[in-house]
Every structure is written in C-alpha cells, then in structure tokens.
Image 1 (cartoon, one colour):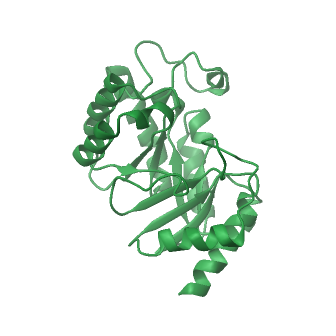
Image 2 (cartoon, helix red, strand yellow; image 1 turned 180 degrees about the vertical axis):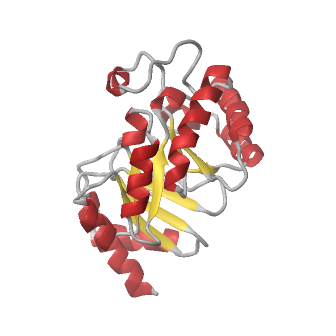
Length: 240
C-alpha cells in the first residue's frame, strides 16, 4: 500500500481530500494542537484519508529558536526541547499526544534541526524515544545534518526503540523496516531544495524505491508538492 500526500494543505482541503491520500499537519509543529481542531479535521476528512502530525517544536528544537514566537498556546519553562528525556519533555509529549490522538494519525513525525546530532544528543534521544513508546502508536524521526556523522548510533537508536526512520529517499534509504515514511524536500546539492519540481523520471525512480514496501507514506514537501503528489499518485495507480 502506497499513500501519497503533502506536508501541509497545499490546496483547498476539499481538493486535497478528493485528490490525495494523506496530509502531514505542519501547524502542530509551530504550536500545540487543540482537541477541537484535531476532532474537526478528523470528522471532515473522508473515510480512509490519513493524517500524520509533525510533532511540536518544543520537543525537538532549542527554545531560543525564533519559530517559538508562533507558539501562542505554549509557555514552557525549564529543561525542555532537543529530544531530551526530561520531566518537562515528558509532560509536553503527554499533552501533545492527548490532543493529537483525536486525529488518529498514522505517524507522529519528529524532525530535529540540522545542528542536532552529537553522540550525547543521540544517546539522549534514544532514552527519550524509548520512554514515550506507546502500544499502537507509530512514531518516526527524521534526523538531519550532523546526526549522520554517527551512523552507528543512529542504527542502534532505530533498532532499540523500534521507531520509524524518516528519510528523503533521493538522499538515503531508511534504517528501519515497514512502515516506510518518505519526506521529499527536492533534489539538489543541499539537504533541501524546496523549489525543485520532480520530473517524470524522478517519479519513476521514486516508485521503484517504494513499490516493495508493505506500507509506504510518500509526502511531498516542496513548492510543487500538490502537482508532484497528484502526478505520483496517478503513476502508482497505473502500476497496480
């Protein structure tokens, strides 16, 4: 099963629900979700439509980041952020999960900043992910940047915690088994190239990487995400 979607609503919601299979909510990264909003989205989406949620930045990023200015419903104090197994982070996660679970998301998407990934940080992240595992809840992490300087520790983290290794398949392959969760940020020399428009050949290559997975979520995260996602969905349907 391949489900195709976008990172955020790249078009009107009704159009997204009609044309695609999934959306990864981005608003849940910038501010803590509310139960009312999560319930509304779940009720308005058609049966079989999948949501994932990008986890709140208060768990993954340093509180000095300027994006915290957008967090109107969060006034955290103390030792939180950077995937540390602290009491503060555990409380934030419990509050986040309590609201986001009403959406019944197929994936809780953790994305750390490119500067995150020292050996000490990865070891702390291993403790954090081990502590928040819940039965029936699928958690994934997209490491970036310097984290890939410690491949051995990353491998150990995904093996020990059982969480999903989220990757851009045009850059690397996942270290975990199914389900597969791909976030596509554009092709180029840098880790992201959001203005990239995927070609037909790119999408054929993507299909070849994805088709053997038992369950795969393919989420486009570029300027042309809606157009690329709908093209890829047609390609997937034509191959079945």
